[in-house]
Length: 163
Image 1 (cartoon, rainbow, N blue to C red):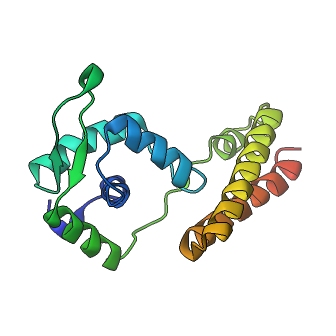
Image 2: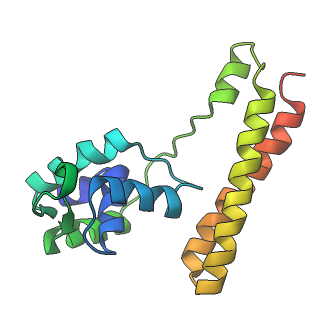
């Protein structure tokens, strides 16, 4: 894996580790809070990436703590790999909407669940936007605006989908 070829999940892990050492569980909590409105990562992805990043020298594993939790710290090599990733092309966007998939195959019986999910996600994104605005974090604010607009668009689509 060349430094410019890290995947988006690995880059997200490295980006979050710029904030300081974190265990896999802490990374997930921070990722859900900071990135969740516009980027999804699973626990298994995080735990799969950490040893790979350690083998590449991008992160350093600390001493195991309670319940074998192990903090990871980004290295200078990891910071360079992340900076290289940030300069590269983002690649093709992946869209994976399970409701749209069901509609494509002729089903649409989970509309209420999808509407509830998007309403909740929209409310969360709006709350995080307030925090980002208060903190003066213009880049996070822009990402959260994307998330809000995505959920609004999904709600608009759900009103007409498979009627």
